[in-house]
Amino acid sequence: MVQFFAMEVVETEIEGVKIVTPNVFRDARGYFCETYNAARYKAAGIMSDFVQDNESFSMKGVVRGLHWQAAPHTQAKLVRVIRGAVWDVAVDIRKGSPTYGRHVAVTLSGENMKQFYIPRGFAHGFIVLEDNTLFSYKCDNLYNPEADRGMRFDDPALGIKWPEIGVPLTLSEKDKKHPPLSGIEPFCGCADA
Image (tube, rainbow, N blue to C red; front, side, top):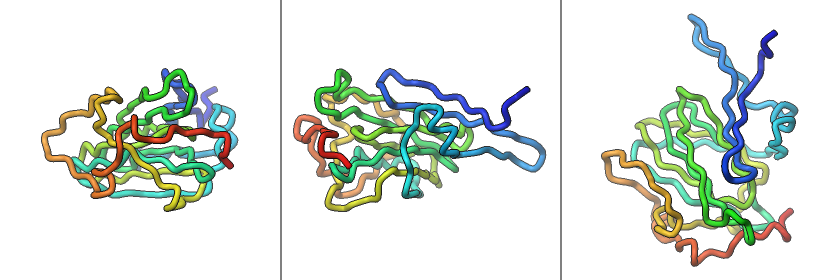
């Protein structure tokens, strides 16, 4: 018997970061899938209680990130693409972590329907691979502008090989001014809510 709402959960090389592929049912009408179910996700090790959903719309070449929120407003995120495609990155910034400064990346698209779980203690960002991309994500803590932090997406110390996409990159003025990894305060969950 096939479990109707089964999903595949892949553990990545950095503890806590997961790639989720929901079971998608397609027919002549289109498709149906369950994009989130608290009990199923908790059973898969995604323990976050999500309290806020966000959405962004971007054109090819937009870079958003690398972002996170400082304690006590840190956020875990469950991200996905509804339409279009992005190359999504999570960078470990946990103080004392054996994988500090390392990253995991995955292509998320409306076609592959993969989701990326990014726990607290990670910087997050993405580059948009297709025009008219609609990106959606759940957060387990409310956004607080005073806790907003960022790091240079192209810091050579991170070793991130961003894809060449054939168009100029577009960043916000804020993202252009972020410090490198060496200039950030590492995440410490000790004061986290």
